[in-house]
Length: 216
Image (tube, rainbow, N blue to C red; front, side, top):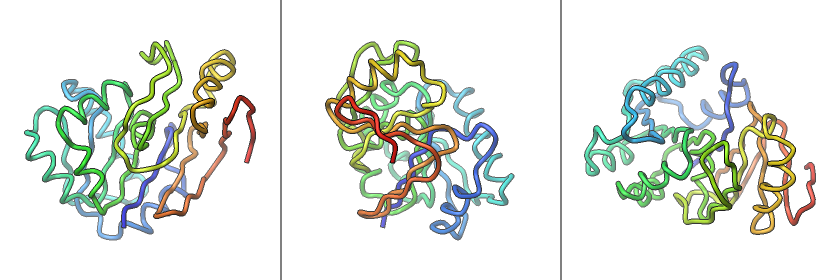
């Protein structure tokens, strides 16, 4: 059974709730796979991966194997690593570029068929949706409302980093996206866990739907 966790960011380290969820479903700390957002930005990818691994170490979680997926791996090897993973982390970064890389490397089917825990951060969380509804955000290289087929793991759409979003972005761009599908705005340190048909939300968030903003 696949476990999907959608996160925004953990600027001060992983929260206790997040660590509890990881430990609940991953008890062997086996193979960790980190999927980049920019498959050619090796130094930045390695730095981000090390940062995530350090946050796990700070909570007593150390993985036996670590593999980074970017253009240093062949498509065949990348698919193999996904199939052997215990935990997959889909990186934050440029949302539109990331989905292009994932599709170019034909990784979507491998991710959909994986039975491990898949964790997305920011852009990675956005791209986990079956149908991505991505709000316009000129500050994040998103020039217009974008709707496209995502990885295909979850049925919801999120907007990460809600705490740092401008009033204009919320009232115009997110509301525009919410006309197409509900948007869950996640603050940093909040996350959504989806196991089968059950969804749990940890931390602060807002749900945007049909122009009106509602807190749940």
